[in-house]
Length: 366
Image 1 (spheres, helix red, strand yellow):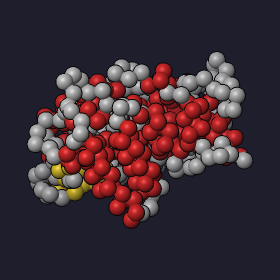
Image 2 (cartoon, one colour; image 1 turned 60 degrees about the vertical axis):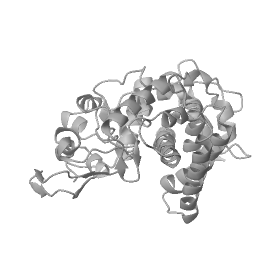
Image 3 (cartoon, helix red, strand yellow; image 1 turned 180 degrees about the vertical axis):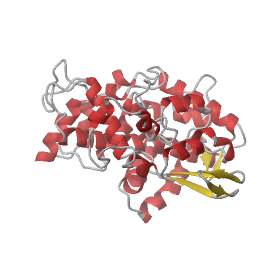
Image 4 (spheres, helix red, strand yellow; image 1 turned 90 degrees about the horizontal axis):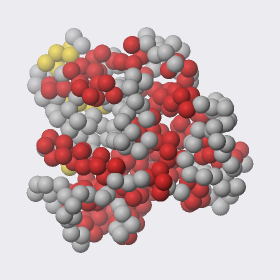
């Protein structure tokens, strides 16, 4: 399916015709109950709100950790590793030493090697169950918190129902992938395109950065395709869909449709200065697309695993309304730390993310 209106019908208007599912909270192909997912989603937002990530994150230190001995950043890796460090307090508090080591092993051997680079590596797939077994063992040693969750570890430990330790470990892995994988890839695309098209200058304004991010997500959406399973026989876009059949939504194709986008393969952030209604409706980087559409949908049914993580990159997800600044950390603040002499100084009017962009520009030019 490569039609935006039909895609919206599947994702929002006729969502009841499809099996309820979640990329975050599922075990194998089976999602947790809608009630559990709803409460877990709300708790996840509370966990994010409990951490002042913008103040606690040391950009220069993190860049030093993800750079090689010559200060260079490795493509298809550094974004995920940087985001892993940014969200470290949210994923697992420092008291979880062994769990953090297992999370790092999972990110390096599986998230980067398979989901991000794009090859299927047998070794990475063998790592997943090994890490899951280790996480289950560590989770079994921790008591459930009496008060609200402080991190994702507390969140999965506090989920109600008859969940084994292996189940909770699997849920933690999915949340880690959702948090660092999609967001890290988006960060790399934004920085690379920003440098290539001249955004590494103090004259760039915040609204230009927002348009840059939107255009990067149009060309390279976090969810390039979505799948929904029909719960009953019904018609969609003049086609008959039978119960149990899979409906594939081609987000990548919708974002590059010449019927909607002028010169669709070109990188043109200026198109977001005055987007048309058709363009707003055809912008689906997070599955349910615009913030407007997601307000009408059930908050307990995330459309895909990128919704809570990568949507923080934009600050606003469609151009029609900004996301609430209290629901999740604003991504530009991730890069707001003071720049060291090694990475360059930052003018007062420079968008915060440019301190990273300048570092990447130097690294790739060596």
